[in-house]
Length: 328
Ligand code: CUA
Image (cartoon, rainbow, N blue to C red; front, side):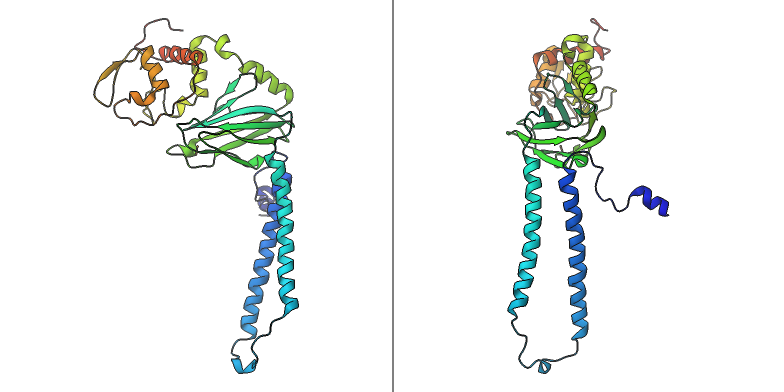
């Protein structure tokens, strides 16, 4: 039993420590927790004690009623004020540190959308929700947070780093952190954003500086370096297409996308269209214009460049049995 208690660290209520912000959040949390318990037990205890001690007495025992006591009033006003100011100053210093990114931070753009996290690095490299956000250890990282105009509010939440910041359509938000040890830490969406809110999970991979630069070099320029269909598969992951579109034929929030290219697609109005390059382009740029029968108008308009679009089309060709052109 003692062994189990020691293993689970039952006294440790907070997530693992992954960033410098734990120095602010954790002690303040425990201070407030212990203070609250002490005050609750103290005040509650006094209340019950006095209720017991003075029960059964009627007013005749106190002919003059209770008296005003200046000293008492001042003491029980000033002490709580002092405690609250102490907590305020402590919390404010932490807040100032947590809201002001350090100069010379590595800047990474995090795009939240229904239902995807996309990470864009300074050299143009990108990584997908599945692969996670890769950052170097012991370096300040500034996060620029955004979400497409047509999307909803999400919230970038990394419990181990003690950061949580909303991504709001129509504005950029920022946050920052300095990871203190290598490892993997979960990212959650902390703002309810619809059907697959709970699936908006990713991770931060904190690696050594060498590993980080190796990753950057590797992840950059894949659109130029990989064959189009392979690059397209990466774009498919990075843009979060897989969240709604399976490539194994199983309908999700959106239609499955294997065996679609070069097939005939039936839309909600009953009309049939050829799934050619234009169909794919339209579906990406203006998804509401052609909703596949049996599905709802749910897709976010994503920011996809011409190159990325070409790669996506090449990928969809490569996974369609109907397409008989140049396959890998
Ligand atoms: Cu995105 Cu909840």
